[in-house]
Image 1 (tube, rainbow, N blue to C red):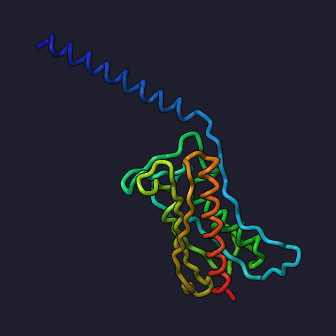
Image 2 (spheres, rainbow, N blue to C red):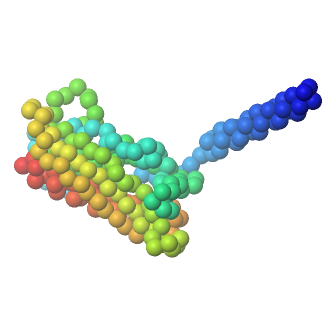
Image 3 (tube, rainbow, N blue to C red):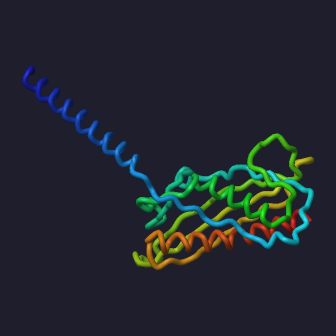
Length: 208
């Protein structure tokens, strides 16, 4: 009995030590600096712009736990999630998307003010959104070809009466011949530019 107890205690102590080593390795990995990437907002010629007096509040988008991260998501299959090593977004994906919307809509000159979350003003409109996809996938079981997929559902609400003026889902894709960041990140940028353009066109029609 005592001998078995000593053996069990030894195994228990070994497992704690191994667990401690694993935890330490994770901490050490977490301290490795990652290269940071940021997608571009839409740009416009602002020299002849006449800004509207209307204001727009953009709430932080909702997203699944998989996307609520600053890591760049790769999905080898529908059921598997991985992260591109050594790189990250400048913010968590929902916040990154929110800022791209805000900067793009501000640059368009369509609104007198575009603000994020509650900053103490009463806006004319509120934009709610759900970021449904923001990842790259391997296309047709070919590890050398990738497809970037970005999906978002936007809902525009008039502030004074809380009337929903419209809801629409947007989707954009772009292809890349490698998962190297120098190749894959421009594909993310292309898809995002397309989605932002479509979103702005839709928003302008609803707020005329």
